[in-house]
Length: 448
Image (cartoon, rainbow, N blue to C red; front, top):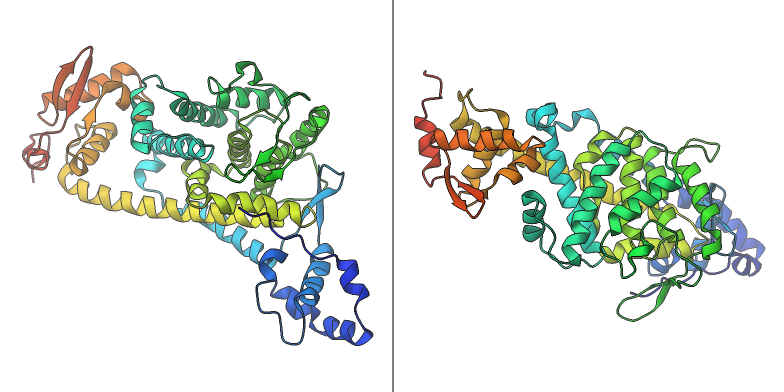
């Protein structure tokens, strides 16, 4: 991936203006800035400029207008300049779409709305986010294998699977920490969870990188240096400032919670305070921030799933910010688009679940003797008859005790709706091939 072209110097452009040129630009100022889609110079220079002006003149007008709306946040670059952002029209529109999509009108199925089965949907999202966040950092494992490991509870076989398990445990911990203020100790705890058993130096977990640990962010293929983090001796002060921002103590003006969470994501990734695991920790902090600001439906949303579809755009969003005067608006726009896509993905998923539940309901209607966990398993079994179910996996999927999960499955065996065999010390359950017919004939159905 190439580093974006740095924008031309505004002073050099303005020094070349004649009086007539400047008057002409001022006359177009309002129209151009209202229509500003917030393109970086590297993109804008390939677009057709407005009639009668050059790319440089077009850039000058847009950049001066943006600069007048910049808001500093307290994050400083390596050379001491502040990071800033502004809120162009397209960002305001995206934020409104995200807020509407995350409202209670999203139409969650009844099963998700009930406390008893909500955890099953949350756990599915935790698993998806854990897998894709690990894959973004290079973990080489398939979804099927990773899901089998997490659901069955078996130990990870290698470092790749360990990364996935660590992310899963970290996301669970974030749910518990949503009411807590961010502190250095909590940050170290999250980093230890993310990196446990995956670092070349196990002692690097839960501590800042040292001055002798030279960290650079480079292109893994071409070796191009993308980012040189701040020096190690600055990290304590910088993380204190980040925690103050995360807790809403700074700056002295309102920042939309989605923007605050995105900036927190960028902040940790930019400071790169750890030897490894910075990206996973940064995304974990974003989730903590959203849940702390009562965006409860982020329990059901995986941003890493969307980022993984276009990882180059994710990396480029960091570079666009750093190559244009530390303007965070580029990264904020990218991540807001990611969130919007994640919300759409959630909506599509929930629609599929509604259809599946409606279809399965025809077969399960009237079987009041079955609890919601048993019904959920049978709905799944109707779609995927070859699935093997285990007690531990059922326990994890629904957040119940081992005995409750065991009772659920053996009750279905006694009703003739599952078969069971023993493999070593484990019981393996499976739906019979004629499950749909058995449900229709089952005596637990209400008589018409």
